[in-house]
Structure formats: C-alpha cells, structure tokens
Length: 281
Image 1 (cartoon, rainbow, N blue to C red):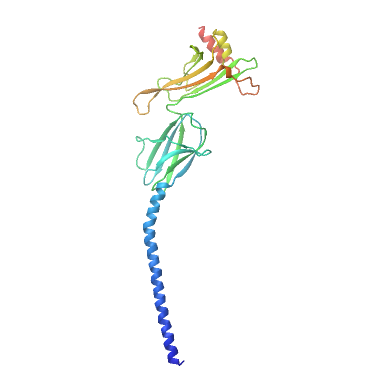
Image 2: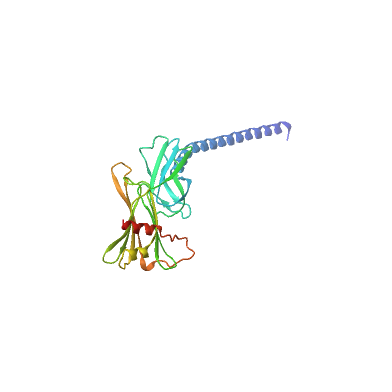
C-alpha cells in the first residue's frame, strides 16, 4: 500500500472515530438530560410520598396513669400530623392527643391528652408525621390528670389474721374542694352498709385501716364485698361548668390475702383509732 493510500485510510478512520465520539457524546448528554429531568420530577414526588409516610419518634419516658400530657411542638413550615403515643416495649399505639387551639399558633403546635390508669405502664415514644419541616423540637410535660382520679386499694393481714386495707386516692384538680373524698362500704347481696368515709384534706388521701377492728367496734354484720369509692368535682377544661371524677375498687372478703411477714405493710392503728374517736365526738 502506497503512502497516499495509507494516509487516506488514516483520514477515513479519524473521521469515523470523530463521528463515534460525537454520537457517544450526544448519547451521554441525552442520558444526563433525561436523568436531570427525571430527578427534577421524581424527587418532589418522592418527597411528598416520604413526608406523607415517614414518622419521627421522640422519647417521652415512663408513664403511669392517670396523667395529663402537655406537648409543645415547634416547627418551621407546616404543623406536624398524626401525633400519638407508642409503647416502646410492646409497640402498642395509643391515640388520644388533640390540639389545644387556644394556645397553638403558627410555628407552635400544642397537643394535650388526659389518660386514666387503664393505660399500660411503661416507657413511651411520641410518634408523628413531621411533614415539610426542616426541624422540629418537642417539649413534653407530664402533669396531674384534669379529670381522672387515682385510686389504689391494697388488702393485707397482720399476724393476728386481722383484715387490713391500705387506700391511696389522689386528685390534684378538684374544684371547690382541695382533693378527693373517700368512702368504704360493706356489701352483701341485699344491702350496702357504710363503714367509714374521709373528707378531703389536700390532693392526696392515704389511710391504713384495720377493718376487723372497725367491724367489731361498729358491730357490722357479715358481708361479701368491700367497696372503696373516691370522687371529686373538677372544672371542665372548656369552661362550660363542672363534672365529677369518680373511681371505685371492689374487693372480695373471701379472697383476702393471707399474712405476709415479709410484706411492706403498715400496721399502725393511728388512722383506725382516729376515725373511731371521731364518731364519739
């Protein structure tokens, strides 16, 4: 092959390579443009989907009812949605939070929820959809319930086999009084007999009573059940008036526990003697 022929072949290969380079460059540019166009259109769609389906979680800590949650959420673009509680141990979702419109404002969402003692004790998280917000801050206050009474009644016996009862009633938002009223009754199938009652003397009433001594001194007949009731009046949060919070516990006398020498029980007769003394003036 002569030198001119070699030069022609070289020129032809060069032009062919330039065409391929140009073609591949155009293909790559088209791919980049397609990717950019897809990104511009897909990312907002994905963002909307993500905001609609993504949840943030904020630890609250241990909760044991009854209690009132007061939650302040600061946001920068739109109010978060679907806020509820999640039990960290069981995964159970608890609903009951609602917005307080009187205290909420743009950039600040106030949620409240009043929960009674049927709510399982444990560690909880606040779970919510953050929406189109770059940052959220949550502050959670655990306050005394506005409408639910706390009442526990613990039966036990002493070494003489006397029936004892420890009562703890608590209510911090009573209206007109400063705490809960408590009454104890003896029930049989035909009637209900009042054993004793206590007026409020602060937001907490805690008593340890020897029921056997009360039965004897008050000459009470045999019964089947002991009923413990606690109640108080409270102001309805919307200002429409007042309502009653009431809680009751019922214990079977036949199911009273046996004496536990290692139990953390109080056997002081002070509350029993004070009550019996009040009946005689």
